[in-house]
Length: 305
Length: 305
Image 1 (cartoon, helix red, strand yellow):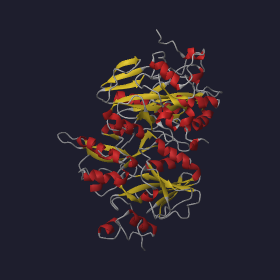
Image 2 (cartoon, rainbow over the protein chains, first blue to last red; image 1 turned 90 degrees about the vertical axis):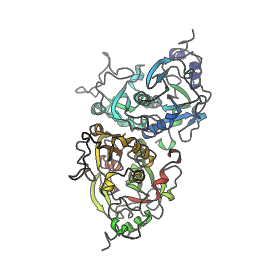
Image 3 (cartoon, rainbow over the protein chains, first blue to last red; image 1 turned 30 degrees about the vertical axis):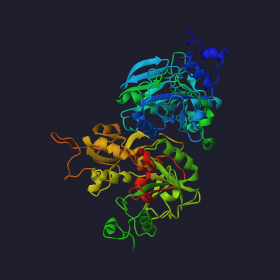
Image 4 (cartoon, each protein chain N blue to C red; image 1 turned 180 degrees about the vertical axis):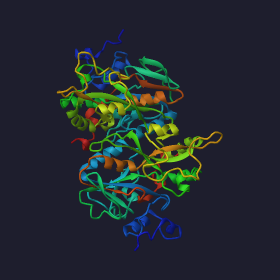
């Protein structure tokens, strides 16, 4: 059985999986079905949301009204189209973002919802569910700025520990849009020393297509965002274990403070919390769609200092 | 003394003040210095924020990250330019939005801040404060969709009572952007019957350049937005007086519920709550800049049902 035969470790051992297209092809033939963090470095990764066409304009509006947690980067070229996308990033065409694709198979694992209730988790394709009435949307992912942080000597701790980023539901309301009401921001967290926060803000600011600079930071922010327990994220992995230094301040030494970014799980949460009729598909969190463009392609030249 | 010689009542009596340009010229020669609600119907009105150029890119980013409360519609054609603007609305050029203007004089009343502290309130021009280093930004105003609501048989109550709209500071955080941190949404409120809310949402949805559909509605929303007393707005006029029907539900009859929209006071509040150095100017709330384009010009054809 071919599943799991290409893994991140496999890639490290020399298996040819260096580009976004490599990952898509491996997922398409069911040779790869794991989380994509760290795969094909510098290739952009995206969240996927597939909706019945009657919700398409409301979803575009949801993204337009909430661009920080829901940065829309591309959508199906036409209703029912699963093999090409139209870009919504100025200066970057659909083909540059994604060519040679099958949106029904190229994600390692998918989720399927019916009437806003999950009916399949972790399935390998959505060929049976996709209809001529479906429209796919690609949403930016914060993996894109992690390499920039690492290059600046500020690697996110979860990457150095080879873990998933901690992700939290918050109480900050999204601006509603048509059928999409009653949902809230989802945030990812990376911890830094308070003295590093301004530099972290500067580095991530230009990545406007992938959540941009943080939305909140410091211990005050935990309560302000309505997060009950920083050690118990809603998705991803806990920032704390026994052997690690604590996040909190300890007298005489500067410890980390939490820094929160808008997260691409937000539109999936908006799908799950709205009352949508019909079949909706998304990627399985962590198992992203790999694109052809690079992290650096989405930083507008005008934004680079 | 010419001040106050042209008033809304004056306009009703036949004084020639029917276009946005008429209001600008009257303000320019100090013939008009009152709130602009109801003046030159169907001409778009805008909030004005004038910043030292070093804050311009951060302010653009603040608007891009918070498009519902801070819909940027135009800015100075170049640094220091007070007589022409460049449009940020697709399909609408700067000249169509505003021609023959003097941004230093064409607003009926201005506010001036130094180091984020107000130093002048209600002044008639900002000629002495404007420098070659200033950049002006125009932000959409929700007056634009009030005529659409009225045309649909849903006039906002404050307009039928000839009052100012009630405006509230909330606890919902803005997404920070560079120098602009620590501020929150400001919202305007119009009350409707619960059964009318979906129609009100539909009518205002297309006005994306002027706050679009409501961000929250119903009595639950008051607490969720962190509003302490609905009868005591932060700006504008109270929705309640002795002789009016109450907003709250009373058994056996359908009374109004509050409906909240993003408000253009938000960017002014962001200026006041950030630690900006130098001189910043804005319009005085209620005394808007009148434009040459019409309310209908800013509704994308694709959004009209």
